[in-house]
Length: 166
Image (cartoon, rainbow, N blue to C red; front, top):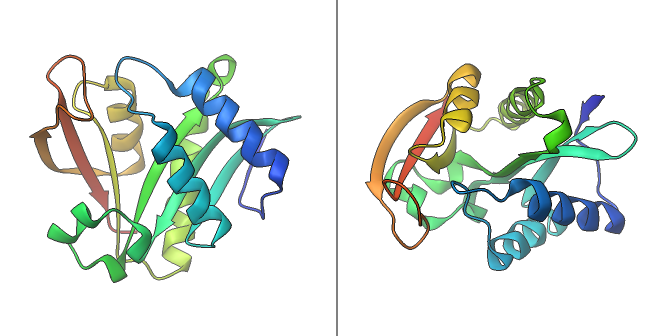
């Protein structure tokens, strides 16, 4: 298994979407068709970069979104022109628990650093302990937790925003 950042071909988008819909959905994750389409459009327009975990196929990925393509909500923390944000991170269930998510985050951080990004933001459901551990291991720190019923339908219904300065 290798973690790479490379130019995507059309079949990669299909593989990524299938992986996200079949292995990314759980009680904590917010995955919508609109959000997937927005992230893929950013990838096509070079406003984002996919970091892929590949074996004989894509078994995981993270999407690093650059600067003004990040959601406007992050502007309350820092100027959008200085940041990146990580959209979806997903790993095929048969590969979970092997550190692949952490490797995807590490490579996302390294890529942002090479692009002179000052801060990377990521978010999760407050109660998603697996994501919390992965983000903590990568060095992310909590910025804010807030009630987010439009996006979170279970548990506390809170979103936690985290950041790292690469």
